[in-house]
Length: 135
Length: 391
Image (cartoon, rainbow over all chains, first blue to last red; front, side, top):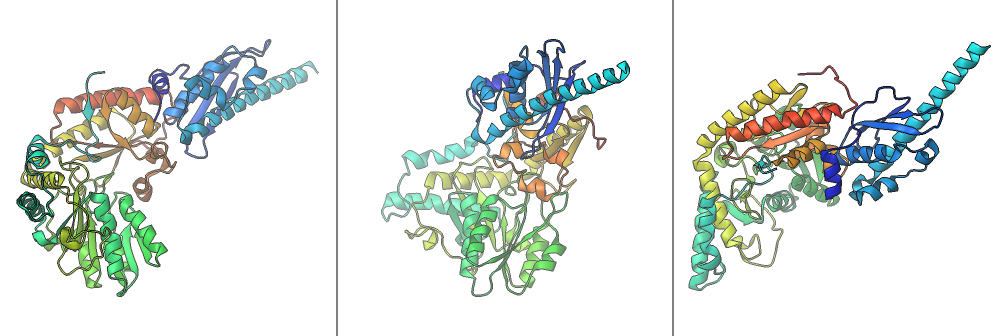
């Protein structure tokens, strides 16, 4: 069902765990199967580069592996570049995923975008607070 | 990874050497077609007859009531569709439970297309089908009731004698899928009031691709496979003599050694469950607390997902199975777990461990130790935190 590459990553996924000081986070429950994804991003506010990305996922092999691959793909990428990533980029790394599991790569991308959005929302909040302070 | 422990014996077992030795001559010495008139055929037929005797004895039936099939799935298909179609002049209502094997449920779906009405009985949270519910739904036009003797996912033993008696009171035929029961609990079709019963060889250390349907003399059943006079004209096709002989031997051994195997398996099962419960927090036992077979254990591990547990154990050489939505290929939790009404946090991670008669305590220790590591690793990766529903 899963190829060797997927199983290798599953055995030792990279970037699993929480991230202290993350400034962009998102948690998503997949509506099809109930798998739960949480992404943590540490983004440099001056450069908008994702310096660190981690994940916590409760799900099948595909969910865990896609999470691991995506957090690797976004590390050291600018936010705008990260937003251009698609599920195909994850599949390209893995070679293939069983067809019935493909949607989980999409869910990972969705979680990433929510985490980036969370970063912007936090930034906006901070800016507003700063403006208020200045007044 | 060198060590291998196979805990998926409810899916299939190895073929025991006693069985294999019995089968081998049927491939190269007594290889005639059991339907042929010459001595080669007669010798093969004698082997088939002996196997039929063994199967009938194991369930206290007459040998004339045993029909060999390609396995449990065919036996179930035949029982449900064959009995329904042969008795439709008496009524078109059938009752089965929601936790039946797909071969029963899919057969019922086909019958619905033919105008039969099917009632699906619920089970409780321990996997037990309610006799009261059967009493409630059974009608004068109910022609067939089918409830499995032992559930394949959680191992709950149904109250077959009671259910059969309720069916008979309304004049309905009672069928049971006993694929997971043979060799684990005593089956006496006379005493239990069973009219039709499905069996399979490869769950009891016999070969794959062979099973049987018991049909009580006098019960009408239409054949599914035409084109031959084999099995008294009820099931066409050259008899798979080596496998039938293997099945005969396997069922003979299974009933002969049942008490001893059960004692061993109960000790192993209890040791395994006790250890897992002690060493891993937030584990839920799925199934009946005592009305259960000794070879099947179904446990849920909160905060993780079943397929991941299965494959991480597999990477350590341990084979188990899961009914989690992610592993079924259909994104649906197993219909049994669903019917039992388990909460999402438990149904997501239901793992079935099914033991063989040759399991050792050492194997169990290795599995528990590995399981601890696997669950810990997956929980460290999980965004779900303790739900407070610890058992």
